[in-house]
Image (cartoon, rainbow, N blue to C red; front, side):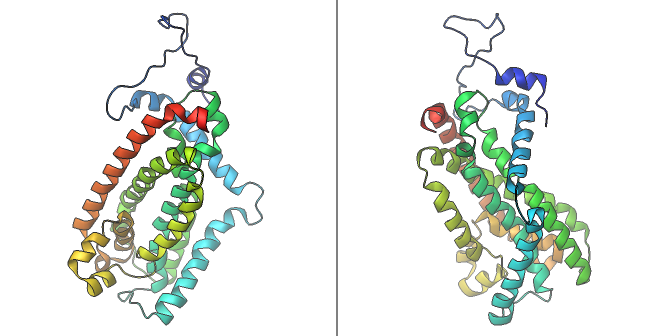
Length: 300
């Protein structure tokens, strides 16, 4: 992917000497004022770099691999088969009259996107250390691009879901058009946590070891292999509300609702509350990120 002329100019900018006004062609880099201090106009100028980094992450993921992009099909398929044996056959969990394989894959899609995005974004700044330490650009686009790079795996798994829906004669509903909204919620949740973790990982390198552990644990806590209604029936409304503060509960239920119908409608109060919590995490994460990014080049 080619980086345009404006982008090339931005990447080669220098800080003007004291007292300089930028009239000699140099770009003045000043700290952004405000609590969060995001320069959205600057982020827009670097949109080509954002897409370039996302594409780079996709290429690196499949470079010199034996299975290549086929792994994006095998991973959800094998996971669904294992969950079918454990949760449906042995655990006797209900699928509300719908094919358990389709119900589980509809949950696995957003969960896979979330975990991949979280893992990649948490290590994104360290992985781009050469660029971070040598040139100026808005560092916030690095974890954002890492989150976006997981979209290819999601689309491949989505094709598998469509094939299984046709195989099991699951009705295609207009509600499927709402899937991008729940995918956007998963993106926001992954980015909110990823901003925090990417900044922390610059200083504390054990973050990259902690993230995979928590994502594996989270897969069993989140309703990937079972319906979230099981929690409501066994623990009651109050505990179910706190359980729903996990944003992936509402996202997973939303995917199932779009794919399988009204029997899987999300608990909207819990979903909206979880999105509010995500916005708080995102806001605080951006503040921490902006506060610490001036030291990234020295520490990384």
